[in-house]
Image 1 (cartoon, rainbow, N blue to C red):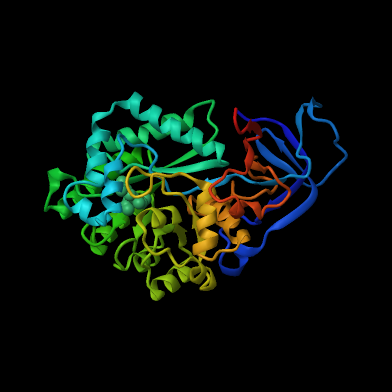
Image 2 (cartoon, protein in one colour):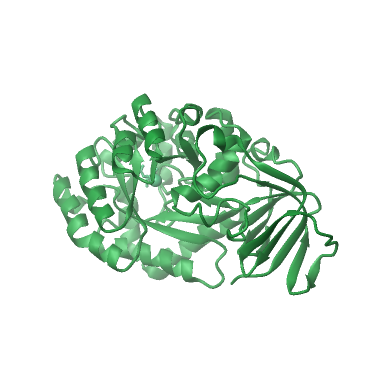
Length: 418
Ligand SMILES: N=CN[C@@H](CCC(=O)O)C(=O)O
Ligand SMILES: [Zn+2]
């Protein structure tokens, strides 16, 4: 449902462009004082100085909203989440607090396998309604586009079920968030294939990719490329096959061990490489040269108590960095955009301007949507947030606290709290 909307008296703060911003470009934001944005049928048709509007309300075919000097930013793009899942894994969090590692829990049959079991047991309706609950929470924090991954089915039926749930949520007339689905059949080796990882990759290539592609159930194919999960060679084989089906490549890369996932992402021309806590210097350079979006997930590093990805160095090396939450039931049970912002600024040493670009335009680029969303420019979707301040520096300063008072999707106003 799209609307005609005029927002006036806003302090407009936005990156500019229709592609990812790389390196030093990430710090450049356009700021318009006393600004107005006009949205017609959901698409931005004017961005500039105020034009004389003074009254709130509906008149001359447009809703009019007086921002009273507050900051208007593009809607946030959360470009890496796993929001469709069954069950929870709170006990694993306690085990980790006692010193056990994420990978050792996975090796002894917990971790992703435990969520796979719970997800396979839930039907369409229960899974869908749990996922819907997370979407509502994201919208309140200003997210207007979210990526979601399969990967908790690891069998034909449940992988397709996860993707169909995302499609069904995305088709909902009342939706406040656009959903971009990613096929992550290679998230872990299912127990049925224990010791036969190559055969599982064959199954994904021969039996899953054709169905996913033919039914347009996902735009991207992702893989957990990690020591003890899927090797570089297995990841390369799967992603190359996916690209032949028209699915762009994404990787969970160099999260726990420096396996060379960043280098592989560059070699394959992947859309993004994500996590990257252990990415090598050569991998960072290769991503910058190849134009791979480096998607950083500081909440996961925080939750796992691991060193943060080297965001500052990546930007200085010329990478396009995106930030996302990684909401999932294991390594990071959080979709907190405010905390993501604070951690990126404090520990990854991004400036607030770079952080805004990473959560908007570069997130959009990581979803191949920088031409449509991620900045406030004529021709893009009318997706915005209004902050409760005229100062965007409150974003990292309000640590883990929401400063969004209004989410606007396709020109529709959603006051936070409603
Ligand atoms: N690292 C792999 N995948 C997810 C975690 C999945 C899980 O633990 O359930 C991630 O991005 O953090
Ligand atoms: Zn992930």
